[in-house]
Image 1: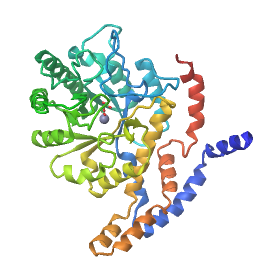
Image 2 (image 1 turned 60 degrees about the horizontal axis):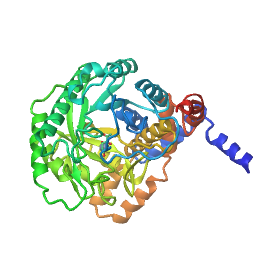
Image 3 (image 1 turned 135 degrees about the horizontal axis):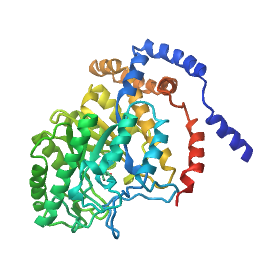
Image 4 (image 1 turned 30 degrees about the horizontal axis):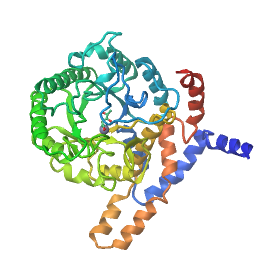
Amino acid sequence: MARMTATTLRGATRPLTARQVEAAYKIAKERFAAIGVDTDRAVRAALAVPISVQCWQADDVRGLEVVEGAFDAGGLQATGDYPGAARSGDEIRRDFDHAARWIPGKVRFNIHAMYAETGGKRVERDELEPAHFSRWMDWAAERRLGLDFNPTCFGHPMVMDGLTLSSPRKAVREFWIRHCLACRRVARHMARRFGPCVTNIWIPDGRKDSTVDRWGPRQRLVESLDRVLARRQPGVVDSVESKLFGIGCEDYTVGSHEFYLAYAATRGVVVCFDMGHFHPTESVADKLSSALQFVDRLLLHVSRGVRWDSDHVVRATDEVEAVCDEAVRGKALGRIYWAMDYFDASINRVGAWVIGARALRKALLRAMLEPWELHRRAEYEGRGADKLALLERRDEMPLGAVWDYACHRADVPTGASWLRDLASYEKRVLSRRE
Ligand code: RNT
Ligand code: ZN
């Protein structure tokens, strides 16, 4: 039995030859062409969508700051104790260099203020400067990666009574305003070097139980955000992210969905939808065609909540496929920033990155292979049965062959063949970390 398993795994991770990939693609291409879909175009378009990969998957959102004591993580919880978490910027970069070889298409890298490298010196968050991120920038320049950057308004002693920008204490609010302003200066610097830098503000502010003042914190948050965003910074793509609840903030989240959607629409900034930040039965996909009537652009934090905002590794689930479908159907790709946001400490973390990025890319490709006009016509002509049958048909089309071809074109391994390399990286590098 054990031998059987080993043999099967070896089969599953055997790389396809170029010949095999191309032969299967040729057939797939014809089948898609018959329903009016140009697979070459879809592959090109799917590989061109930038996906921003989150640095915080590498180290369970610990960050690199020189700090004393432990702080409340602001409701973020990486669970699991799989060995190999990165312990320094160098280790995160090394891990990502490895992961990047298995991720097809255009990628960016997403860092947080808490990943400042200050040479062992303690630097307060409101005093951060571009120089504290120069190692990230030099690395990104060498790899030709774009960079995104976020203020870190959690995991810090200035989070008082669970509040930051909405705190009733002036000193607390001012500290976080200064932090966000400092981050926008860093982002501006990054934008100068690498082009537009998405700078997303998420705060943990909320209350655990039976909140009686739901107004004050929201009024203060409007004022604080207005101060942070008063002056546009060239190249900085400002964005605000809502949440439904957090651990310890079950009753009230200051920055709710309605709050930020209205804020973004009235202030002309980008709104971020994190797929784990809504009620589990709520469709994030359905929000695209509503929000984009009123805001110019969206940031999507692609995540996978399991029962709660658990930040599981992204897979090509129905929800992710639906979001991609909606983006493509609405011809809205140029108005959406794609970023991944999860952190799983219970599996190989490099693998976690690769699985999520490949799954999202595959879902984008799938969306681009939809014969949408055909489906739409059935809908408008009242042929409901045709529409359902055609949608069912979609899953019978050879997406896998086109996906393999896309990987092959992007010069990354097909199928699960990268798992062999992952095992060797784990053995040589990750398992040696304490
Ligand atoms: C938290 C938000 C936020 C963070 C990252 C680290 O619930 O999703 O985006 O996950 O910024
Ligand atoms: Zn998020």
